[in-house]
Image 1 (cartoon, rainbow, N blue to C red):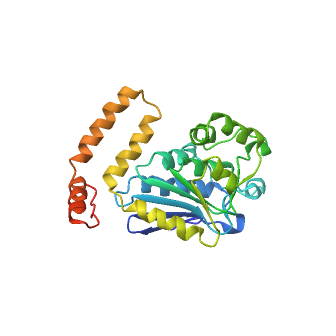
Image 2 (image 1 turned 135 degrees about the vertical axis):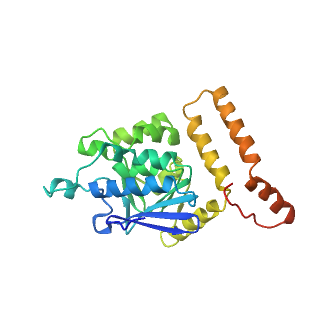
Length: 258
């Protein structure tokens, strides 16, 4: 992939790590960052070599939302495009496991991006805030679509309507994050979890991800038809045969994605 100005992208085996990289501005969002995220995530979504995407922020923040200083400074920014707001869709729908490693402030659009990921883990110093009503706007990045599916409809409304900050321990208590870790070991702990997911059979985990996405909007009987077709197809794959063989031979499977 191209060199980026506001993000970094690293690949180790089948694990990709995407880092918001404006630490001096706490990774505040600019139009350039929106474009670079759109380009990077669009490529990742179709890259057959990537099984897991780890999404985090550089420095002391994950993402506090838009960079208010940049947006109100009068400095010229590149134009934004409507499709960039589907960064959320890319994170939510790509046939990879997406993991948000929330290392600090997580608010506004950054909060929506974290919610769009399949799994969320937080540093003990992380602080969350929907934030939009604090600047008198209704919000973007699909938080009201995503958050009720994670914490329930009433709790999601409270978090958005109150626009109050809450800490990582509260986020874990309400089910927004799966687990919190001490700051000093946070990234290493989450990366080890991501590596574990990256060892799963890519065809099967991709189709399982599609199952979850399709189940959000399909009647049960229609979903079962689709699920059964995918179950049959993945069960006939070389990876499935390799999994059974590795189990019998008491070794780790070597999945190829076919």
